[in-house]
Image 1 (cartoon, rainbow, N blue to C red):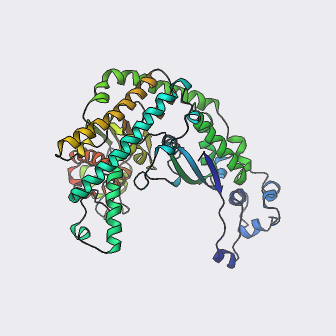
Image 2 (image 1 turned 135 degrees about the vertical axis):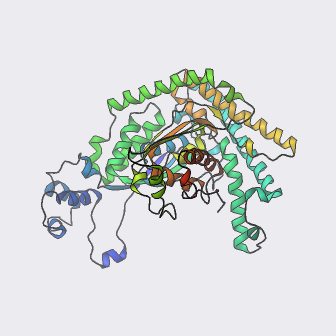
Length: 473
């Protein structure tokens, strides 16, 4: 399937219609809200000026004094779109641009992917003279992914205790329990095999956000150097014309973004040159290197250690009360090597600023999860890891040479630095979420490491932060 973007309109429920509630187009909804800033006659007076036979015309004729380029107005135009068949990398990039959007992406935890799902190299902009080598590398990655699934499924079948599934469920023979156990075993295997998946594999994304958010995304995509991003930007712009046509004049390439993105790529390229000299051993190492976590915390000047702990006094779950001392405390936490698989999840936290310069720092593929025996099976699995290290090495070399398509050689196990700047209340929420029930084992490990640093600084909060153990669900 080729790239496809579909704008999906919202419609009133039968209950809403029966109650006589108004139905407005997205732009007319925004215009009606904007009208509040010009008078205080109430909604009925505004709706009385609308021609029900020509809602689009009403936007121009009644609310023409409003500048629809004004961002506060564009924020009130709701738009939902479904995006089919983009690369996993491009999906990650979209979320990095739109962290506050609501939406979902096809999950590698529940869906088995195949080599047939690769985005065609011509659409990715892979140089013609490297396409054959790229295809061979991608086919090798998918072969490793398939073999890894078989390996981890077999390991879980023979050693069910590694899945940490309660004995009561393992012994339950009901149809519901059997289905649940099969899902857990499949998730266990997918969670460890996914590191071999290429980021050039196709995925699907749906997003709901304001027209302002879609315009900002279009500007970023149309200004990007990679043709896949530009193609998606054009497709989104075309669909945006159906729901927010007056915003199209803003959804275009921006010179400042072109220059800024080029500058940022040059910084990452320069970093790759340094990384290749200082981290090349990690890229070709036979074993996964544990990432190094770091944490910086800046509380307000008057806040004491006791104040920090008191802010968690009523914190009974991750959605519960957190006091203002923690809300005003700045936090920067990071790791020097996180896989793209985990970055995709960590990147989607809505608050603060995330930074991930995509210069390969290594490759991880769950060798630290291998059983102690049989040794020969483990040796064969280590040979699979060579596929990921090779792809990461090639990508690092291409990046250092200035080729932006280097990213499509990487796999979900390719590691990069990752940093998140936020506030302490949001950090605690993320730590509790990413170590809680159903959390992926790897990012749970990352957050456990950072929480250990947090407890060193604020020991009185141990036990008040609801740290989980990533129990399966």
